[in-house]
Length: 305
Image (cartoon, rainbow, N blue to C red; front, side, top):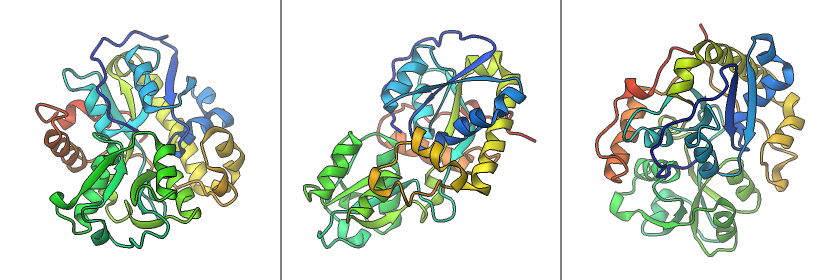
């Protein structure tokens, strides 16, 4: 989940009867695999092709090359595609912090003595800069009482490296997404704060190209019906999909036995307040030259009735 400087090009057309999705191995994408396994897409006449990707950069490149119609990403990532012209639109929230299941955690190294946000003042925190990780980290830390001038970041873009530096004590703190964050805690890291304390700053989203939205509108409506059916199934009985989760989602070995599939939101889009806050942060970081208009990048037309 990263906000990169994607080259602005023209998205190529894809087959009219197929929806191709670039999917990272994260819990947020699970409804696609559940809907495929249960035949929900077939029932609704939607052919979905899942395109597994190993990184957010690879995912965004597939989108830019016109090889994918849609993806699960985040608000800042969608906005990044739309810096110069509207190329993608968010049609739904995919995952948000619900119950006791955060998306991101700020963690302290084992034995560091750090237990509170106040302890992180002037301590370098490992993140990937100019990404959703930095945005959420900043919002959580200021919510926890730090002033922006007390926040120090160290760029460690590769997640496994960030985890190892934390566990080895070479970094005193890092921000990690779950399930990697949960794996770090299992290995002795200490949670300082997570996004359950600021549920409004975290959300992954379902994003499609404007071309797909214009040429495949009916397919997208049926796609979202199937997605929500699958999400309801996951929420009702998460344990039923353990085997599928371990096959499709990257879950570290040390928590595979105890990992519980997180609950998912239903029939929701990001709020204008969420969008505007991301715009404010992107402006601060000079990632965009002017705030993008919410209604031009977020649509509710495809949410099931």
